[in-house]
Length: 393
Image (cartoon, rainbow, N blue to C red):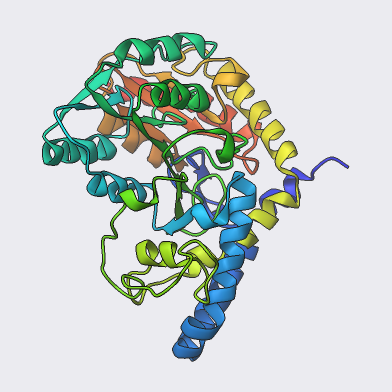
């Protein structure tokens, strides 16, 4: 039976006065996830001791196991965090690698993460070096070749995004990690957009550390991030906070414990009293989209992205057309001389949420189309955009 996309949209908590074409920044919530978060917070408010000490551990292990099954990994290797930035900062602040050396990143990384590795390189006595990506590649070969050419005997860490935030280009994560591993290079992947964007099987991606978000395309509450830790890399991480779990008598640090994880995960994850509700709502977020079918949702996303590319063909594309290398993020190049602040104001004046991204060499206009969006929404924006662009120059 075909999914009822009108029913799917009606199940979302969308402001009817705003056209949200920016799931790539923040995902809105479904009513069922919002209701679950509200109920859990009601329980926390009514009996904090009972909730945090007795109710949370089994719920936390269930959430961890459900997310691990969706991601294709072992729950004993899956750490909950607030977001990708927290995950990557944990790795970057922990790594101890003898120098001299360098951290190698692509020239399309999220600026905050660029800064994160800038600080880490300074701490390690390394240099930070970027290499250019062939961003309109219609296959993985040119990207792999560019990365391999950039690797040198000095490269100690390779950091890249599985899905590039500015353009939605999907990088060949497995092959890049394989090439790095052959050279003894530590790999750290920013998977902020990947969960719910592309099918994931983390067991098949030989990354040392893979960070992700559940609050974008998976539509979990804000504050649901994760970090997957490859076997053999566990002892390379040090917690931001020393709290309960720092000293543990556990004979097996990776055995499930009474706190909803393992002794090793608790050491890294537990920061004292905090709001764990976003983590606990991950099963409801997964179930909500599973009810429509993840394959059906991806087909819907591909259909919408294709329509967007056609509707905005009057602008140069910044996202490859190849289904292998792209997904529900579509980016276009704004005309030279467009003022980004004025363009953002013009877009919001018509009550559209899209992302205007300032790159060193160009200004990008990025649309995110999830299952709840419609071709009519994109068509209306395409009709208005030429006037917005003209007013922004």
